[in-house]
Amino acid sequence: MFFRGVNKSNMIIFSLMLGIVILFFSFENSKLGIIAYADKHCQRNTTCLIDMNKIIPFDWDKMYIIDKGISPEDIEKIIGAKFNYENSLFYKIIFVRDQKVIYSDEYHPPDESYMKKFIKPNFYYPHEREGDYFSYYAVSKDNSILSVKIENEPLMSDKIYYNIFPSNAQQIRGKEL
Image (tube, rainbow, N blue to C red):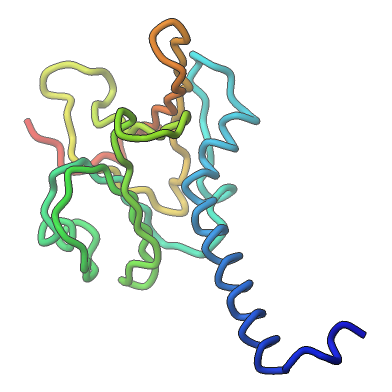
């Protein structure tokens, strides 16, 4: 009964907008999927392993987690695909399929946000010492397990940090010695 009075073109427009909103939230959940998965399967202040194949809702060949301050030209060399974004001072996560960027996002510093939960990439392997720094991770579908450690210091801040780092040396790239 309700649909009789509604114009078909309005229904089509509404359906398209609803589809776009759902698609937007599903891509947004790929970033938050790490947090949701870790909340469900990991304990605080303990390192656990997460399989990105179980979290990411779209098909991908490689995932790159890139340190802040790397130029778009250098990112293109790293990922082997066109990267049409400007310089920024934020960490990036980029998914590539068939030499094309299919998803890209930036992670802003926690002090500039109202959010309570943050993904915080760690660019030291195996430990934070001189010479262990690297500039990006390259994660493939057949080597898709990352380490995550949930850190929360309630006396210092109400924020929760999800430190992600490579689970093995094959994921490390751009090591500066």
